[in-house]
Length: 144
Image 1 (cartoon, rainbow, N blue to C red):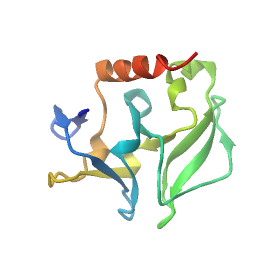
Image 2: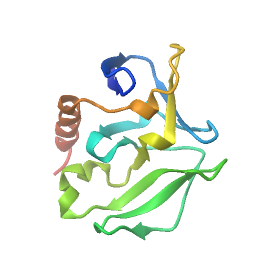
Image 3: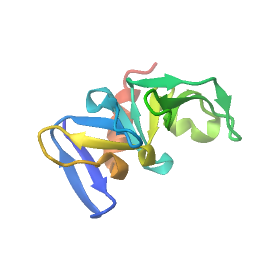
Image 4: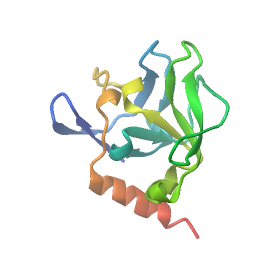
């Protein structure tokens, strides 16, 4: 299935049909790809992947909202690129589908669409609200 991305630089929606490779913005090491895509959350400014590579998990932390997570850093340059969420407070229950997955900060990554020559889409990624709801509805069908 195609991903629908919005570019902040052009403010136009763009459909992506080829796989995306996500890279650390600091050193361009590959962090993951769209084959492990879970969702994108505009309000949290993250993309969520089920698997990441060339990264390390740090010790668990708890933020002021009560979320528990492990910071994810690029293994090559040690740049923080996101978090692996383990606990979310009720305030964020609508995002429970990201628990156990990797939430990568849009500002910390870039992307490349294979075969396109289009670099740096990852810094501008945000999924349209309707598609996000469809993905959540689909994943909700498997929950008991």
